[in-house]
Image (tube, rainbow, N blue to C red; front, side, top):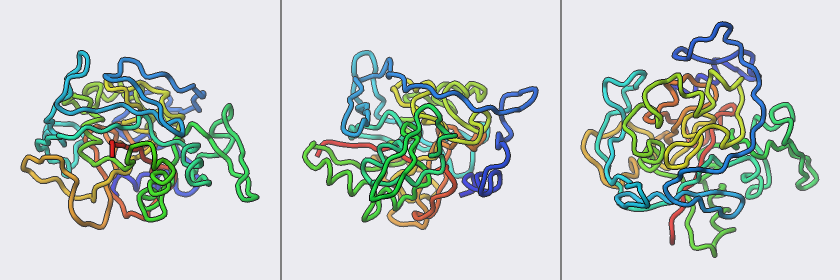
Length: 315
Protein backbone atom coordinates (compact mmCIF):
# COMPACT_ATOMS: atom_id res chain seq x y z
CA UNK A 1 0.00 0.00 0.00
CA UNK A 2 3.00 2.28 -0.38
CA UNK A 3 1.50 4.28 -3.26
CA UNK A 4 -1.98 4.40 -1.71
CA UNK A 5 -0.59 6.18 1.34
CA UNK A 6 -0.06 9.19 -0.93
CA UNK A 7 -3.76 9.91 -0.58
CA UNK A 8 -3.57 10.04 3.19
CA UNK A 9 -0.28 11.92 3.31
CA UNK A 10 -1.27 14.59 0.77
CA UNK A 11 -4.97 15.02 1.35
CA UNK A 12 -5.66 13.80 4.86
CA UNK A 13 -9.39 13.93 5.30
CA UNK A 14 -10.41 17.01 3.34
CA UNK A 15 -7.91 17.41 0.51
CA UNK A 16 -6.04 20.61 1.25
CA UNK A 17 -3.10 20.60 -1.12
CA UNK A 18 -2.07 19.50 -4.59
CA UNK A 19 -0.31 16.15 -4.82
CA UNK A 20 1.42 16.45 -8.15
CA UNK A 21 4.44 14.38 -7.11
CA UNK A 22 7.97 14.51 -8.42
CA UNK A 23 8.24 13.40 -12.05
CA UNK A 24 5.78 15.86 -13.61
CA UNK A 25 6.13 18.18 -16.59
CA UNK A 26 7.53 21.53 -15.61
CA UNK A 27 5.06 24.36 -15.00
CA UNK A 28 5.82 27.98 -14.02
CA UNK A 29 3.17 28.16 -11.33
CA UNK A 30 2.17 24.51 -10.72
CA UNK A 31 -1.33 25.89 -10.17
CA UNK A 32 -4.02 23.29 -10.71
CA UNK A 33 -7.42 24.49 -11.87
CA UNK A 34 -10.65 22.55 -12.16
CA UNK A 35 -11.06 21.05 -15.61
CA UNK A 36 -14.34 21.42 -17.52
CA UNK A 37 -16.70 18.49 -17.92
CA UNK A 38 -16.43 16.63 -21.22
CA UNK A 39 -18.82 14.18 -22.77
CA UNK A 40 -17.64 10.61 -23.19
CA UNK A 41 -16.11 10.21 -26.63
CA UNK A 42 -16.90 7.32 -28.88
CA UNK A 43 -14.12 4.78 -29.14
CA UNK A 44 -12.33 5.09 -32.46
CA UNK A 45 -9.87 2.69 -33.99
CA UNK A 46 -10.76 -0.13 -31.61
CA UNK A 47 -9.57 -3.53 -32.89
CA UNK A 48 -13.08 -4.96 -32.55
CA UNK A 49 -16.46 -3.24 -32.39
CA UNK A 50 -17.36 -1.75 -29.03
CA UNK A 51 -20.39 -3.64 -27.73
CA UNK A 52 -22.78 -1.83 -25.42
CA UNK A 53 -24.36 -4.02 -22.77
CA UNK A 54 -26.71 -3.38 -19.88
CA UNK A 55 -26.28 -0.38 -17.58
CA UNK A 56 -24.44 1.48 -20.34
CA UNK A 57 -21.36 -0.71 -19.94
CA UNK A 58 -19.23 -0.86 -23.10
CA UNK A 59 -16.96 -3.79 -23.91
CA UNK A 60 -14.03 -4.59 -26.21
CA UNK A 61 -13.35 -8.22 -27.12
CA UNK A 62 -9.71 -9.15 -26.40
CA UNK A 63 -8.60 -12.31 -28.24
CA UNK A 64 -5.01 -13.37 -27.43
CA UNK A 65 -3.28 -15.09 -30.33
CA UNK A 66 -5.88 -14.13 -32.90
CA UNK A 67 -5.95 -11.64 -35.77
CA UNK A 68 -8.90 -9.26 -35.96
CA UNK A 69 -8.91 -7.04 -39.01
CA UNK A 70 -5.43 -5.57 -39.34
CA UNK A 71 -4.50 -6.23 -35.73
CA UNK A 72 -2.95 -9.36 -34.27
CA UNK A 73 -3.34 -9.77 -30.53
CA UNK A 74 -0.10 -11.20 -29.14
CA UNK A 75 -0.47 -14.49 -27.33
CA UNK A 76 2.56 -13.88 -25.15
CA UNK A 77 3.76 -10.65 -23.53
CA UNK A 78 6.32 -9.43 -21.04
CA UNK A 79 4.55 -8.65 -17.76
CA UNK A 80 6.28 -6.30 -15.34
CA UNK A 81 9.04 -3.86 -16.22
CA UNK A 82 12.69 -4.05 -17.29
CA UNK A 83 15.32 -3.03 -14.77
CA UNK A 84 16.10 0.04 -16.90
CA UNK A 85 12.57 1.52 -16.68
CA UNK A 86 12.36 4.82 -14.80
CA UNK A 87 10.39 4.81 -11.54
CA UNK A 88 10.04 1.01 -11.45
CA UNK A 89 9.51 -0.82 -8.16
CA UNK A 90 10.99 -4.10 -6.97
CA UNK A 91 7.64 -5.90 -7.26
CA UNK A 92 7.62 -5.56 -11.06
CA UNK A 93 9.90 -8.50 -11.92
CA UNK A 94 9.60 -8.94 -15.68
CA UNK A 95 8.45 -12.38 -16.78
CA UNK A 96 6.81 -13.97 -19.80
CA UNK A 97 3.06 -14.51 -19.67
CA UNK A 98 0.93 -16.42 -22.17
CA UNK A 99 -2.82 -15.89 -22.33
CA UNK A 100 -4.95 -18.49 -24.13
CA UNK A 101 -8.50 -17.39 -23.29
CA UNK A 102 -10.42 -14.52 -24.85
CA UNK A 103 -12.36 -12.07 -22.69
CA UNK A 104 -14.27 -8.83 -22.96
CA UNK A 105 -13.14 -5.86 -20.88
CA UNK A 106 -14.96 -2.64 -20.11
CA UNK A 107 -13.71 0.32 -22.12
CA UNK A 108 -13.96 2.45 -18.97
CA UNK A 109 -14.02 2.20 -15.21
CA UNK A 110 -17.35 1.46 -13.53
CA UNK A 111 -19.22 4.71 -12.93
CA UNK A 112 -21.16 6.05 -9.98
CA UNK A 113 -24.37 5.64 -11.97
CA UNK A 114 -23.61 2.02 -12.77
CA UNK A 115 -22.80 1.27 -9.14
CA UNK A 116 -26.04 2.93 -8.04
CA UNK A 117 -28.06 0.97 -10.61
CA UNK A 118 -26.84 -2.30 -9.11
CA UNK A 119 -26.30 -1.47 -5.42
CA UNK A 120 -28.79 1.33 -4.78
CA UNK A 121 -26.25 3.61 -3.10
CA UNK A 122 -23.18 5.71 -3.87
CA UNK A 123 -20.12 5.47 -1.59
CA UNK A 124 -18.03 7.89 -3.68
CA UNK A 125 -16.14 10.80 -2.19
CA UNK A 126 -16.48 12.89 -5.34
CA UNK A 127 -20.25 12.94 -5.65
CA UNK A 128 -21.17 16.53 -4.81
CA UNK A 129 -22.34 19.21 -7.22
CA UNK A 130 -18.98 21.02 -7.01
CA UNK A 131 -17.30 17.94 -8.48
CA UNK A 132 -19.53 17.77 -11.59
CA UNK A 133 -21.57 20.93 -11.92
CA UNK A 134 -22.99 20.17 -15.39
CA UNK A 135 -24.06 16.57 -14.76
CA UNK A 136 -24.77 16.32 -11.04
CA UNK A 137 -28.05 14.80 -9.98
CA UNK A 138 -29.83 13.70 -6.84
CA UNK A 139 -31.86 10.52 -6.61
CA UNK A 140 -34.05 9.17 -3.86
CA UNK A 141 -33.72 5.65 -2.52
CA UNK A 142 -35.59 4.34 0.51
CA UNK A 143 -36.45 7.90 1.51
CA UNK A 144 -32.84 9.08 1.33
CA UNK A 145 -31.44 11.58 -1.16
CA UNK A 146 -28.24 10.41 -2.84
CA UNK A 147 -25.91 12.63 -4.85
CA UNK A 148 -24.34 11.33 -8.05
CA UNK A 149 -21.66 12.48 -10.45
CA UNK A 150 -23.04 9.84 -12.81
CA UNK A 151 -20.16 9.70 -15.32
CA UNK A 152 -17.34 9.81 -12.77
CA UNK A 153 -15.78 6.51 -11.71
CA UNK A 154 -17.20 5.06 -8.54
CA UNK A 155 -14.56 5.07 -5.82
CA UNK A 156 -14.14 4.51 -2.12
CA UNK A 157 -15.09 0.88 -2.71
CA UNK A 158 -13.25 -2.10 -1.24
CA UNK A 159 -12.43 -5.38 -2.94
CA UNK A 160 -15.07 -7.02 -0.75
CA UNK A 161 -17.64 -4.38 -1.78
CA UNK A 162 -17.05 -5.56 -5.35
CA UNK A 163 -16.30 -9.28 -5.13
CA UNK A 164 -17.56 -10.23 -1.67
CA UNK A 165 -20.60 -12.31 -0.80
CA UNK A 166 -23.01 -9.36 -0.98
CA UNK A 167 -20.93 -7.36 -3.42
CA UNK A 168 -21.48 -5.69 -6.79
CA UNK A 169 -20.49 -8.75 -8.82
CA UNK A 170 -22.82 -11.11 -6.98
CA UNK A 171 -25.76 -8.79 -7.59
CA UNK A 172 -24.81 -8.00 -11.18
CA UNK A 173 -24.49 -11.67 -12.10
CA UNK A 174 -27.95 -12.33 -10.63
CA UNK A 175 -29.44 -9.35 -12.49
CA UNK A 176 -27.85 -10.46 -15.79
CA UNK A 177 -28.23 -14.23 -15.33
CA UNK A 178 -29.90 -14.66 -18.73
CA UNK A 179 -27.47 -12.65 -20.89
CA UNK A 180 -24.98 -15.51 -21.43
CA UNK A 181 -22.02 -13.90 -19.62
CA UNK A 182 -20.21 -14.23 -16.31
CA UNK A 183 -18.94 -10.95 -14.88
CA UNK A 184 -15.81 -10.71 -12.73
CA UNK A 185 -12.72 -8.66 -11.98
CA UNK A 186 -9.80 -9.04 -14.40
CA UNK A 187 -6.75 -11.00 -13.35
CA UNK A 188 -3.58 -8.95 -13.02
CA UNK A 189 -2.28 -10.52 -16.22
CA UNK A 190 -5.45 -9.68 -18.16
CA UNK A 191 -5.39 -6.13 -16.83
CA UNK A 192 -1.77 -5.45 -17.79
CA UNK A 193 -2.13 -7.18 -21.16
CA UNK A 194 -5.09 -4.90 -21.94
CA UNK A 195 -3.40 -1.79 -20.53
CA UNK A 196 -0.30 -2.31 -22.65
CA UNK A 197 -2.34 -2.91 -25.82
CA UNK A 198 0.61 -4.63 -27.45
CA UNK A 199 3.27 -2.15 -26.29
CA UNK A 200 6.48 -2.80 -24.36
CA UNK A 201 6.99 0.78 -23.15
CA UNK A 202 6.39 2.35 -19.74
CA UNK A 203 3.01 3.64 -20.86
CA UNK A 204 0.65 2.49 -23.60
CA UNK A 205 1.67 5.60 -25.58
CA UNK A 206 5.46 5.35 -25.14
CA UNK A 207 8.07 6.18 -22.52
CA UNK A 208 7.62 9.96 -22.25
CA UNK A 209 5.90 10.76 -18.96
CA UNK A 210 5.04 14.30 -20.02
CA UNK A 211 2.53 12.89 -22.53
CA UNK A 212 0.46 11.33 -19.76
CA UNK A 213 -1.66 14.47 -19.51
CA UNK A 214 -3.24 13.48 -22.84
CA UNK A 215 -4.17 9.99 -21.62
CA UNK A 216 -4.98 10.21 -17.94
CA UNK A 217 -5.97 12.18 -14.86
CA UNK A 218 -3.13 12.17 -12.34
CA UNK A 219 -1.50 14.42 -9.76
CA UNK A 220 -0.37 17.04 -12.25
CA UNK A 221 -3.69 17.77 -13.95
CA UNK A 222 -6.47 16.45 -11.69
CA UNK A 223 -6.99 19.31 -9.25
CA UNK A 224 -7.32 16.63 -6.57
CA UNK A 225 -10.44 14.86 -7.81
CA UNK A 226 -11.70 12.29 -10.30
CA UNK A 227 -13.08 13.12 -13.75
CA UNK A 228 -15.70 11.63 -16.08
CA UNK A 229 -14.70 8.37 -17.71
CA UNK A 230 -13.52 8.45 -21.32
CA UNK A 231 -12.48 12.12 -21.46
CA UNK A 232 -8.82 11.44 -22.21
CA UNK A 233 -7.32 9.49 -25.11
CA UNK A 234 -7.82 5.73 -25.26
CA UNK A 235 -5.02 3.23 -25.77
CA UNK A 236 -4.69 1.44 -29.13
CA UNK A 237 -7.28 -1.16 -28.13
CA UNK A 238 -9.92 1.44 -27.26
CA UNK A 239 -9.56 1.38 -23.46
CA UNK A 240 -9.75 4.59 -21.43
CA UNK A 241 -8.24 5.59 -18.08
CA UNK A 242 -5.86 2.64 -17.79
CA UNK A 243 -3.40 5.26 -16.52
CA UNK A 244 -4.79 7.26 -13.60
CA UNK A 245 -8.23 8.54 -12.53
CA UNK A 246 -8.70 5.73 -9.94
CA UNK A 247 -6.72 2.69 -8.89
CA UNK A 248 -8.41 -0.47 -10.15
CA UNK A 249 -8.92 -3.56 -8.02
CA UNK A 250 -8.13 -6.84 -9.78
CA UNK A 251 -8.86 -10.44 -8.89
CA UNK A 252 -5.43 -11.59 -7.64
CA UNK A 253 -3.87 -11.64 -4.23
CA UNK A 254 -0.91 -9.23 -4.18
CA UNK A 255 2.60 -10.69 -3.95
CA UNK A 256 5.87 -10.31 -5.82
CA UNK A 257 5.90 -11.89 -9.25
CA UNK A 258 7.64 -15.19 -10.00
CA UNK A 259 10.61 -15.12 -12.36
CA UNK A 260 9.51 -18.05 -14.50
CA UNK A 261 7.16 -17.95 -17.48
CA UNK A 262 3.46 -18.29 -16.69
CA UNK A 263 0.35 -19.42 -18.57
CA UNK A 264 -3.04 -17.86 -17.76
CA UNK A 265 -1.89 -16.86 -14.26
CA UNK A 266 -4.48 -16.05 -11.61
CA UNK A 267 -2.09 -15.06 -8.84
CA UNK A 268 -1.26 -16.67 -5.49
CA UNK A 269 -3.71 -19.04 -3.79
CA UNK A 270 -3.79 -16.92 -0.65
CA UNK A 271 -2.56 -13.64 0.78
CA UNK A 272 -3.44 -10.66 2.96
CA UNK A 273 -3.78 -7.97 0.29
CA UNK A 274 -5.55 -7.81 -3.07
CA UNK A 275 -3.78 -6.26 -6.04
CA UNK A 276 -4.49 -2.81 -7.47
CA UNK A 277 -3.38 -1.41 -10.81
CA UNK A 278 -3.09 1.80 -12.82
CA UNK A 279 -2.51 4.65 -10.36
CA UNK A 280 -4.93 7.47 -9.69
CA UNK A 281 -5.71 11.18 -9.73
CA UNK A 282 -3.45 11.73 -6.73
CA UNK A 283 -0.29 10.00 -8.02
CA UNK A 284 2.76 11.09 -9.99
CA UNK A 285 3.23 9.99 -13.59
CA UNK A 286 5.62 7.20 -12.61
CA UNK A 287 2.93 5.68 -10.42
CA UNK A 288 0.59 5.45 -13.43
CA UNK A 289 2.84 3.28 -15.63
CA UNK A 290 1.51 0.10 -17.24
CA UNK A 291 3.56 -2.06 -14.84
CA UNK A 292 2.74 -0.21 -11.61
CA UNK A 293 1.28 -2.34 -8.84
CA UNK A 294 0.06 -1.95 -5.31
CA UNK A 295 -1.98 -3.95 -2.86
CA UNK A 296 -4.22 -3.46 0.12
CA UNK A 297 -6.49 -5.31 2.47
CA UNK A 298 -9.72 -6.52 0.86
CA UNK A 299 -11.81 -4.35 3.22
CA UNK A 300 -9.90 -1.10 2.64
CA UNK A 301 -11.63 1.72 0.76
CA UNK A 302 -9.39 4.81 1.07
CA UNK A 303 -10.26 8.39 0.32
CA UNK A 304 -11.67 8.56 -3.20
CA UNK A 305 -8.96 6.61 -5.00
CA UNK A 306 -10.06 2.96 -5.32
CA UNK A 307 -12.32 1.85 -8.17
CA UNK A 308 -12.46 -0.93 -10.77
CA UNK A 309 -13.49 -2.12 -14.22
CA UNK A 310 -14.92 -5.50 -15.15
CA UNK A 311 -14.29 -8.29 -17.59
CA UNK A 312 -16.86 -10.75 -18.81
CA UNK A 313 -16.71 -14.06 -20.66
CA UNK A 314 -19.25 -16.33 -22.29
CA UNK A 315 -20.66 -18.96 -19.94
